[in-house]
Image 1 (tube, one colour):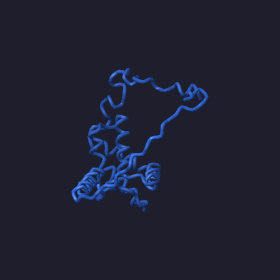
Image 2 (cartoon, one colour):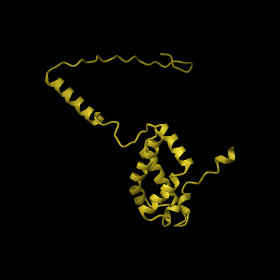
Image 3 (cartoon, one colour):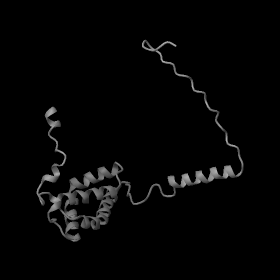
Image 4 (tube, helix red, strand yellow):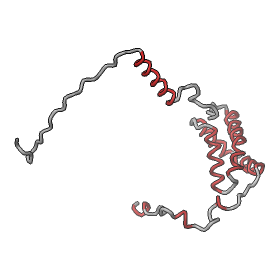
Length: 163
């Protein structure tokens, strides 16, 4: 167990590899959006993949999160570039939603903002400041706290001096 702890990469180790050694540093396998879509279609039509996607959707993971994760991992593997991945995301979202609809499950799309209509913290702070200003303008006396007398601390213990 102790040996496994020391088998981690050394900080800065990623900077010591030759340029082009990593998959994302080489030309991508699929250079067009059409090629990337064909790649995803081929992998998404397997039974194993469909079962896994349905399980993940049932857990409540949004469709957009799944699509983003899929395209990001393909970019890291060197399958396609980031810009092709961004153009493929809407197609991935539609395909995943189609799988969820065909399975008859209710899923979260992730396309809507759950906090829409709720006031932001900055708005609440602004309203609070305006309210305080109104209170002062209407001459409402604020409750003043009386200062609490501090108790004099005397040293205690075996080594304390007697006074």
